[in-house]
Amino acid sequence: MFWTDKVVEALHAGDCFISSLHSANFIQLLEEIKTYPFFSRELCKCAFTASWDQEHVNIFRQTMQEMLDNHATDCSYMLEKAVPLMKNINHNEAILYQLSIDFLKHPGETPDEECLLKLSRIWVPIGDSALSASEIIDSL
Image (cartoon, rainbow, N blue to C red):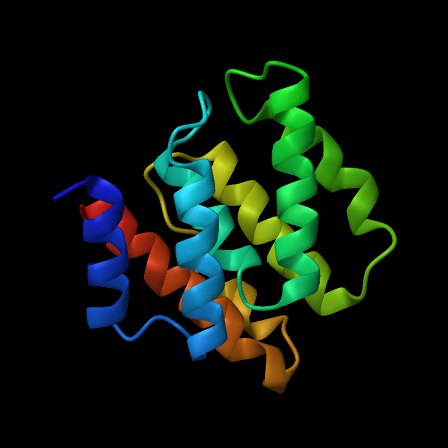
């Protein structure tokens, strides 16, 4: 069994997905990115966080394509791109972007749950599932 298959299985067992669409989007993204030269556990966490809706899946895919076009070997481009994007999105999305930035900047760590307190009530499940997924991904 490949590591990516174990990730999907463990995330399902941990009840991390907020919907069947979230699961399907993540599985599809993971299939696409698992062979990229910059694939990592941290990128996997970012893919999970982006998978909750189609708009963010599309942004993630576009970023991956830009990284491939630029022959990226790590995810530093994602960090550069996130900062200007955060200026043009709503507060809750900015917190989720910050969560992804934290995943990339601090490999093997899960950010503190304090970020959940900054989210509007309806956004908490997305952030909470990303934190849970981070812990599971790091444990594999």
